[in-house]
Amino acid sequence: MQLIDREKVQARIDALKGIELYIHMEMTMGAYTSHRDQSVHPASNFIKNAKISFEHGMISESSPYRVGLKMNGGWVYCEGMTHWDDKDENRLILSGNTKDGKLIAALQLSKNPF
Amino acid sequence: MKIDKILVVLPHPDDEVFPMSGTLAKHISEGSHVTYACLTLGEMGRNLGNPPFANRVSLPAAREIELRKSCDVIGIQDLRLLGFHDKTIEFEPYTYIDGVIREIIDEVVPDVIYTFYPGYGVHPDHNACGAAVIRTVQAMSHNTRPQVLCTAFPTDNDLGKPQVVNDISDFIDQKMGALKSHSSQFRIPDLLKSWNEEEEVFMKRIKKERFWIYPFEN
Image 1: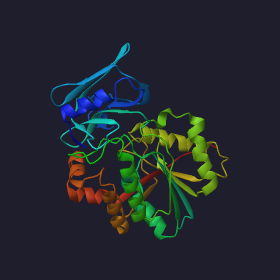
Image 2: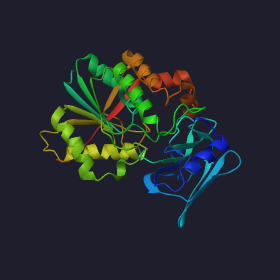
Image 3: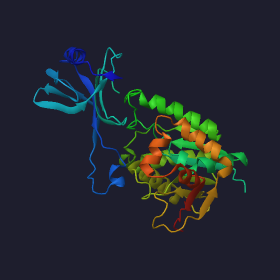
Image 4: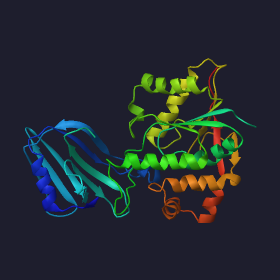
């Protein structure tokens, strides 16, 4: 995984426009977080291999990046992206990774299920 | 006392390390055969390093390699990957997951099963895994039931004193080897920091492995 190159990620988003795609999107604070600190309200989510297609998609200007995908009648939105897999030429694999090495968010798009 | 056949049922690669790797190495040294049924590949693990060494797509393969290494170090002879998905064990239909576990029990015919004590595992997958094992074994006729030994966190809880406390000092090398095998998940300085423990205290604590015998009804 490399730090996001904004122009290259935007180009990859553009290349996936209008195609039926499988999406993996998640946000997490970790299963043990509220075990360690009872005052923390735990929340996380993931959606894996739902099918979407979007008409228009963009990544914001600076890290941690936001990504918005405009669908027909809906949206996919995420915030917190820092890294991407620059070697994968077919899929879009983005993640948000903290300084202490933890993943807190991910957005992945592919023509095939993950 | 030698136990012929042991079945371990745990949800994630690395769950075997702290609760029971020393105990399993001890049993194996005494001639036991151990089958380890690992429900998932820890697909949703958050420890991906800085800079990240993997992503969500590549993580499962990396964790499988670590799990196989850990099993080699401990001496586990039979590892089964059950193909469930991390974080979803509690949502699997009970008849389905219990059926998968029952099939393994019927095949292996273990004398003892090691798993999590349901309700005392912290992580929902730990609790759901333990619950599935308990449901499955509870449904067996009482004279065919294996003994179920459960690990629980934290170790001072309302279950009372554990019935089994193993000093695994003689097998600490296997335990540390298993720990180091899961290199993506465990870094000792980070562990010490997150448990707020000195290394000496940590090493003393991990030399004991504690289990509660599950009290089945009838």
